[in-house]
Image 1 (spheres, rainbow, N blue to C red):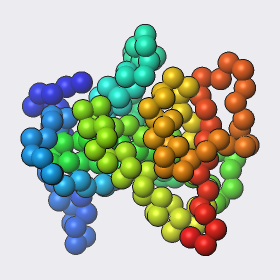
Image 2 (cartoon, helix red, strand yellow):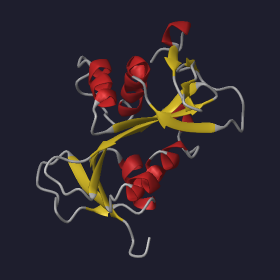
Image 3 (cartoon, rainbow, N blue to C red):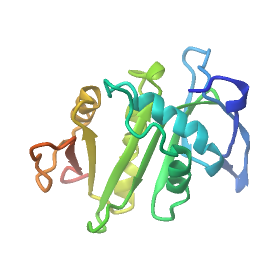
Length: 193
């Protein structure tokens, strides 16, 4: 996890039809009570996103994160560039604080979205960032998605508790099987919403 000036990336934003560029770093924010911005990730941010991803994943693997040698920067760049999905960044005081990736799952109906990744910088846990990222469910619902699915690693008890508090439950279409390394969860829009 880099915390040097070399980790500064150009982060974009659309305002009044123009790109507004500003630095995004993986260095800690120094201001208490800072504001949080949720926005679409840019391909140029893939390295910083991959660093946060590895740092967050490393917390729930007792023997270290698997696939540490995998090119996560390219994987994230590919996710960012996918036409059928989105990668969102939570940026606090110019610093990447969290990420979320979602798109329609393979073979599912048009009313379903899959949350592939949600990671929050471990230094920012319990600060509302994780809630803000999947909390964009309103965007999904506005697009006609009535169901969301995800899978979570069986050893990631912190994330399982987080999703339970957000209203996610076991996915009846993907019950756990012996030897599974992931639990499959589902969130359905309550009737009337």
